Length: 233
Length: 258
Image (cartoon, rainbow over all chains, first blue to last red):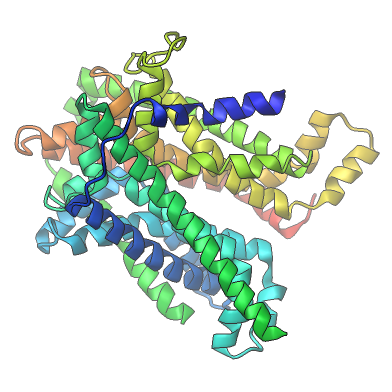
């Protein structure tokens, strides 16, 4: 009974998704931009976070505590405050209103969270398991040890960075100067209006993109592991 | 390869940190005293503190209880279901809560969207942040030495004493990390309070963004000054809380109990 009550409370907000028929999806510039942002940033976050967390945990360096402190510091700076500052900085370099500017700032906002997730995951898995992998050549190390061990971490990093990217209205509006439309920027204006079916279309898109990415990565990883197990036999 | 990643990550991280310096430059000349005396900013600060502290406290408590239920009581089904809110971006969850509490569904008139107590804003944040805290605490519980709990049980301590002696000391650091991450995130955000809040008093992030963008950026130095001051207050809070708990955390990390 307690479990059912908990699930009702947890899943109740999703009822809103079915409150009205969503408008048919039109593949326009905003959707295309959003998909490009999601894939580029998820890829960059996974690549940078795993390498950085590896260095932080397994490299002997007198700079390590300082670098660790420095990399996690932006977590404690409000994203909107740093967005204001980055806007002022990027205006001077002519990057406001460009895709590159928006992608850079989105990466700056998401990367500390990703490094934190990778760091925690590697810490929990533990040094001995990773150290065994060092005896293997680099490619086989990734194939046989790192990918299977870090599957869930990769999925979580991709999910978290995607959700943060999709939730940024002010950042994209300010740094994109209204010239980089995304589902989120379009959505905010629709939310302020009365067109529920159009708002629901955008909301469905915002929920489905992370879910499909998460499921897709999981499916690819399962295939990968099946192939690798076949090779090991 | 990992060294290249660290260099790139450091350069990317430098961006939000140097952004604070740019805020400082832009905020020069702002009359801070008039900001302090401005009734709108003061009301905004009060409501921001209320929403932030209540949301953060509830998220930390519920998230920790859920993580504890998974590790201590074996309720592993929670791990699956608590992932669901993670798939919803904040702006979309704000709209889902707006639909839920805007009168669209029967029987939900008790709490309403866009009311001055900001209950729906708090509920939205709690719904979104509990899974985040759960993930953070799950990692901590995974590293927890079960021997301490077994020892506390053997000594016939009460359940509360078992928690305070065998678990709480190891949860201080992740809870402190989560607390400041949530405070930084909630206290100066725009999307959720703008959609679910009221026109007066607005939360700090909403008021700052509105002041920045209305009137062709004529009030921009004011918004930059508030963003800078708030970032510095949070930074001071982080430093102070970590300094005050440093000795205890170091002792726990070393595994030495004196």
